[in-house]
Length: 173
Image 1: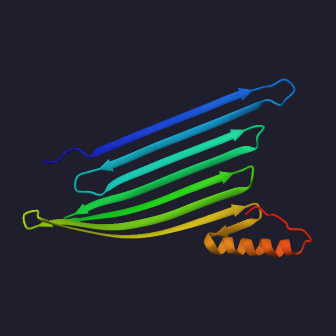
Image 2 (image 1 turned 180 degrees about the horizontal axis):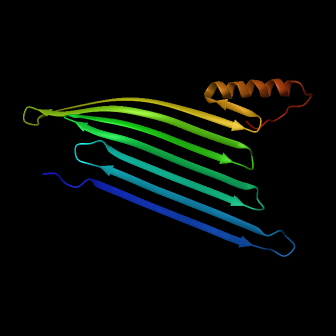
Image 3 (image 1 turned 120 degrees about the vertical axis):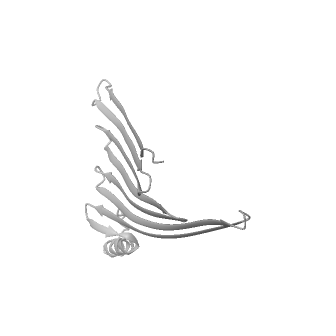
């Protein structure tokens, strides 16, 4: 007997918006915003789909705070006999506008799971294979650096710049 596909949907939004003023000081407005959502669709005999999204933002007029974090993940799941096939893609980003930093992380993941029982359920067999690839990119006002090679390049550049001065120079990386 066929049943209706399962659909799950959840959403949430929170906002804290405050305003403060002190005599003789500049007024301050702070905003903290959180947005979250999930969606899942699992039809019988077809691949299941799931999506998760989240966004957090914090800002303040006087404290030099303007940060945003986002996360998005989507995946497919399919059962074929005794095998489960899984595929997931994800992306996250952190943006600090006041300090000029943006970090993006992107990744994909695939998996294959086998599960079975033998001898009247006295012997269980489970096997799992997982493959994953991620990439992280940092962008600053001064340029772009990816992964470990980018960090090493940034450190080498900082050492070259620092060695040209009589006193040590600190550079934000």
